[in-house]
Length: 151
Image 1 (cartoon, rainbow, N blue to C red):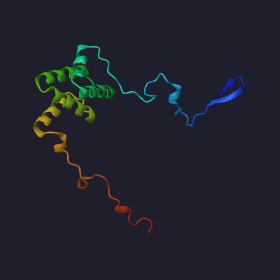
Image 2: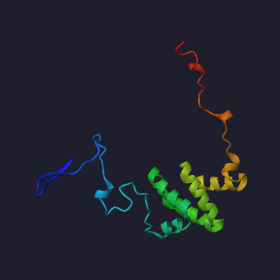
Image 3: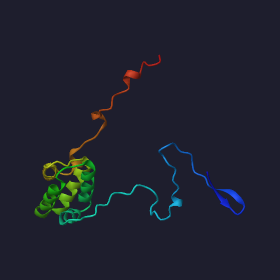
């Protein structure tokens, strides 16, 4: 409870939900200058070099790859960015952007990963054509050991 002095004396100004230490209760209405509330904002790379501008121009997959590579602590990112831009100039730009997006989702940031993904896409087709998920190949353990429990 937040109390303030008014002309009539002390009065309750606001009441927040109770929370635990380390988990503050924040009311978005108290911060009108924060557009979109107080939710975490997605990272926005701000290109400073020509290489950064070139890779971000490839598309959303390249944007995702750059953000995820930075978050994962990938090494030699500048060289990999240059290689991706070179591949986009030599091959289909949209295909390279798609491959960068897949690499970001899969956490693949090593030197040969982008070429490997592009090669796979060229020879095997879309990932949905290759990956088959069904009940017969589940790694979830069964519940049969629990059948006699409690009897």
